[in-house]
Image (cartoon, rainbow, N blue to C red; front, side, top):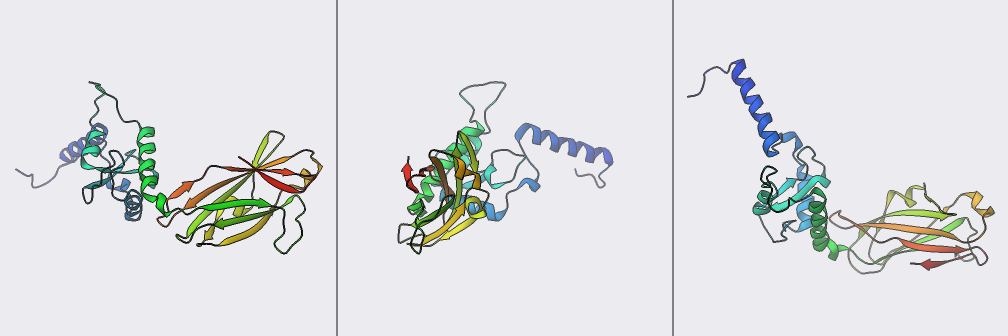
Length: 245
């Protein structure tokens, strides 16, 4: 039997019931739903494979929340029906086994993303040099930089952050292309050259200086792959850099 008129007490009960369901079962309002754009992205990143068990799920996959209160793309995890149910079945009152932690789920998800997008990442090389493009040498603290796409496939976008280390103190460049604020568009076999300046007070320092290049590659699906940092040591007496792993 459905009431013809919903009174205030009836609506209050329904409202309280909704809050209790959200508290007990992690149910959230639709306002926390992921955008369709972000759903497509994460499904491309995992190739519609479950980000827990790893199986191909086709249409039997859901974009679940790691945290029911957030709807940003880093909070999304594509799961098959079984795994989506499994991560919510742990009972604090009757603990058996071990609950999936947020950190574990994120790491496992990123492993699956990487597995299904790594084929889109070409070899990319970033180098420091004091050789000027038109001949001659750059004078420190002016530093030359080259970014090289080493394959015939897959255009990518690259984020570069240059870290300077001297006397045990570390600082990042504040120039847009070398601070990660601007992306480099890199087509197959393309070589991009640039340069940046370090602080003038470095001229008064003695000894060697170290630069670390932090490189992030965004593939055709816009997934970010972070390379290990590459270190270079500057030798003032010879005005050159050498690679320091």
